[in-house]
Length: 91
Image (cartoon, rainbow, N blue to C red):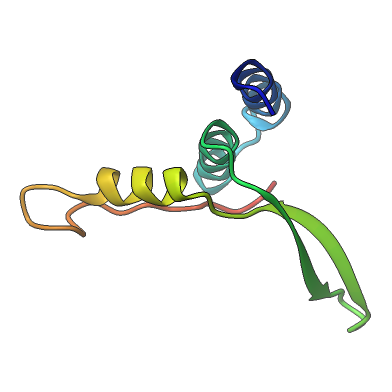
């Protein structure tokens, strides 16, 4: 994906989910936008539904740039975990 495509995808996600109520949902939007902009790969995840039936879904994994950006954002005057990073909860 080109840089322009990543920017467009992040903007689209922000407008699609950014007005969802709840700080934990807004943090998910921010995290997903950063994952898109740092070119995180799409991965296949497996889970169980409420009836314990397995299903698969797509999610964004980690890129080295994402991991570096999160590490840098958490670093501060009191060491590498001065600040937190919350991946949020999908709306």
